[in-house]
Amino acid sequence: MTGTPYPRWRPAGMFIALVALTSGPAAAQGEEETIEPAAIEAETPAPTAEQLDTVQGVRNEANVAGQASQQRIDTLSDETETLFSKYSATLKQIDSLRVFNHQMRELIASQEAELASLNDQLERVASVGRSVTPLMIRMIDAVETFVELDVPFLIDERSERVAELRKMMNRADVTNAEKYRQIMEAYQVENEYGRTIEAYRSSLQIGDREVTVDFLRFGRIALVYQSLDEAETGVWDQANRSWKPLDSGWRTSIRQGLRIARKQAAPDLIRLPLPAAAKAGGES
Image 1 (cartoon, rainbow, N blue to C red):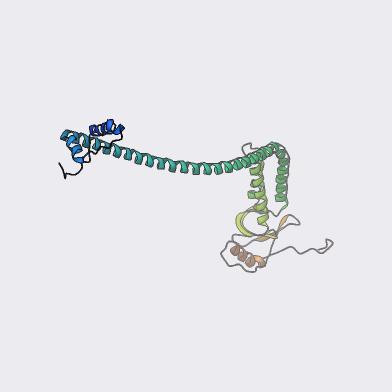
Image 2 (cartoon, helix red, strand yellow):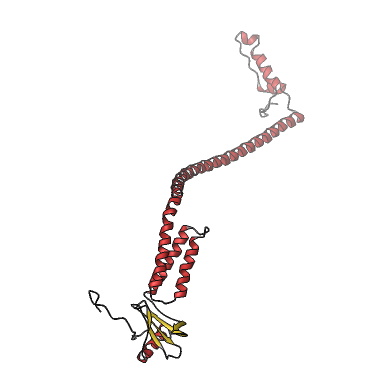
């Protein structure tokens, strides 16, 4: 077998034979023995096909086991990365919740302070109501007296408004705030009468006759009337608290004033019977 390549695979028996040779009497005596490669190859039997298949199977099993291990390592690596991402996201959520909880504590503290203030105000509502109710009654009395002493325009409407206010004061389902609002609204309506002009139709007792006339109110300065046939014209005399007839010279001016108040004509200067201004000291 001289000249053949040295085989890579050697059975375990070969190594045992080498150890036995080196540990023999010749070695103990320090004698050197040269073993020819050809003799070693001659003593070593060639591997059988069954042995090669066994080795190949072991190798394949090792490769399969290695692949399975690598897959488990990859799976664990992916799971670890996923868990780390979830952990990082959870930490961010915890930080956000910490800031949110701090803000909620501040808000709750503010709400508790507001609630305490409202409770204090509710405790004072009863005492405030006891002081406001007499004031509202006096305000209604003042409006009623004012209507009675004022120029007598829209008497039925204004008297009905005062009557409704008195009924409202006896209602338990209306709050004090609503009662006060409606009283102030009545004051505002009366205030508006002083700076507007108005024309309306109603009946008027003239002597022993009840006549349908057109009234012209110029603020609270003048209140005049004119019959539908324009035959009768008059003005309210506030000093004497009575109606005073006017001559026919006022007929055209009052007719024009009625048209302006009804928005049937453009605003213009008109002549109205106004009371003369009083001099200082009460002299007229």
